[in-house]
Structures are given as C-alpha cells and as structure tokens.
Length: 478
Image (cartoon, rainbow, N blue to C red; front, side):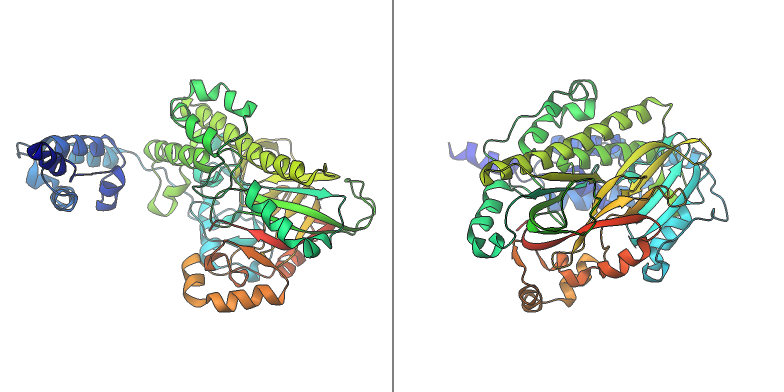
C-alpha cells in the first residue's frame, strides 16, 4: 500500500502543458505534443520545473541534441519546423499605406495609428477607417474597420467573436432603482453570471443544435463548454447593469415618447466558444500566410479555401451564440421583473460582414470594436460605468464603412489603471456620481476610459442620437 502511494506521488510530479512549452519558445506545432509525450514516458520522475529546464535547453539549441537518444526527435522536429518556416515565401506588404479617414485623431494613441497603417498596407486591403474610440490591440486596433477582398482575418475579428450590446427598455418608474435598490441588486445577482461562474440550470437554446457542432472538428470539442456557459457573461469589461434611458428624439424607431425609462444594458460576447475558435484559426492563418513580423497578427484565410469557409461558419455560429447569451439574460430578467420590455436594441462588433462599397464591389468588412452604423441601423455606444451610453441611428457613411465607435475607448491600459488608481479613489468617484458597483476591479475604473462626450463629438457624420442610457447599478465579474 505504502509503495503504491509513493509511486503515484512520483508520477504525479510531472505536469506539462502546451502553454508551458510555448512560453519557452516552442512553436505551435506537433513538436509540442511530441515533447510532452516523450517526457511523460522517459522523464516521468522529474518535477515540472526540472523538465522545463531540459526543454529550454533543447529549444534554445536544437542542433546540440540531434543525436541524443531521447531528446533527438524533439530537436529534429524543431529544426524541421524552423526550416519549413524559413522556406515559406513571405508575402510582401506595400511600403506606403492606403489613405483612410481617422475620426477624432487627436485622442488616438500612436500605437493604434501604427497598427492601422500596417493593416492598410496589406495586399488584400481595399478600404479602411479608424473610429474615435480607437486604442491599441492585437492585429487590428480596437476601433479599426477594414474592408478586404475575399478573405477574413481572425485577429481582425478578434478573440471575443460577436461581442455585443443589448438594451431592454421597460415601462417602469426610473426612481425604482433608488427606492428598491436592494431588489434590483438581487436581480443582478440572481440572473447574471460572470467569468467561471455558470448557472446550475442553464437554459436550452436552438443555437446548441446547429450542425456546426457536429461538422467542424474544433467546434465538436466545444459544445459541452458552450452549453454550460450559455447565458453567462465574460470578465474584463463585460457587464450587466440597470440604468435610466432618456429618449430625446420624438421620431425614434422604438416608438417611445420623449421621457425617462428604467432599462437593462448588457455587454458580453461568445465566451470560451469564440476564444477557442479565434485561437485555432489564427494559428492556421499564420501557418498559411507568412507576413513580415510587423503584420503577422493580420494573417488571413482565403474565403475560397476550406479553412476560410470553416472559419466563416464558426464565426457566424459564435456570433449567434453571443446573441443567445444576451437573450437568456434579458429573458431571465424580464421574468423576474414580471414585465415584458417596451423595446430592445442589440448590435454587435468583433465580427466580419459581407458588404458592398459605394461602387458596388463586395468586400469583407472587419469591425474590431466598431459598431455597424449603416443607414437607419440602430445601436448602443456605451460610455463607462459612470458615463452615459448613447442610443444611435446610423447615417450610412460610406467613407467610414458604415461604422461608429463601440464605446468610449481606453485611455489607460489595464496594468496602468491598476498601478495608478486606488480602490478608495474609485469608490469615491462612483459614490459622487450615484453609481453602485457589484464586482469589478481597478482595470475597469471609469478613469481608465476616454471622455464619451468628446468621443461622441466626432460622430456627427456617423450617427444620429436617439437617447442616452445612464448606468445606476452595475454588475461585473468579481
């Protein structure tokens, strides 16, 4: 009995994961699986740190281990991979970028501008635009809009595929948010889940029966996770909040009289489903599309290829799944309130659409953190947890590729916000503005965001304003 336990403890010491090897510099390829299998078989008595030390030596100088009885296959795999990468013909990008409109350039950081300049040098690029909330991201900047020819860029769509806003407006007195504050806080606790939290009894949905879950290999593996997470929200800047809508346009499509209403606003995306799809197809795009280092995150998939068609189907599934997640939250909340909403507005970003330019050409328009603003298209542009959001109607500006901002946009990175803002300062800031926060962290402090009023001042060519949403009780991930 004692020996058996001792043996199990030794064998359990080695726990290698692909992410461990990637941090050491191992490429995302079959070499990682090969290395893990060899170490689990030949070096199972090593601790994880000891194994990683050996693996680091191999990846740093594979030629030194080519003839090693155990490590040789890993070394030869690395050399073969590097040679294949070197043999790939690099796709050239233009020396000078195509011109594009920049809305609110004075408030846009240099990193975001440089990312957009790079995107406008791609050989597939047709047209682009940069929104006033733009800030640096991966691949395309957040707030970047890019039209390309017959291709899709996974990082041009983003990690949180189909992330969106959904607003429900109720025929309830807005002052209830103050007089019955405890009740509305409880409603947020009962009907919203964030991050790793999920509902014990998630609602079923037709989106989970889509054929993509049976026909696309990467998605087959994700169905159980998608079923468990449906109806929940992500962490970071995602939220579920009650607030007050003030309608100001008497001719609004929602057919609501001018006045104030109690409302629910949600912001979230496609959860683990979208993130895994993004990672999987970004890896494939980078393997098939070798670009200069400055543009590598803009690798694309040709829509005539099998991988391109697969990604397109997967992306649309993730977008519909994100919509279902919001729908579940709003259904649960309406049921708890005992009232149906008077009106609802929903729009998404982090997506790619097949659209036509003013000259009739069909292109693939990527909106990475940008709101669709085609002629008479409705949307919501949020501010921060203390700043108002805007209910808008698109003007259909072709120069802007029928787009608008998706929010205020960050003025501080998450790490800088945590370093420069204290909990006391944030607490006082919220109290002064009459906003109650449940969960959340300093990286989402209102001060980390641009002034939404200044951002919206650059939108006179892009949207018309129908009303505003003022946050009052905000729930975010703990």
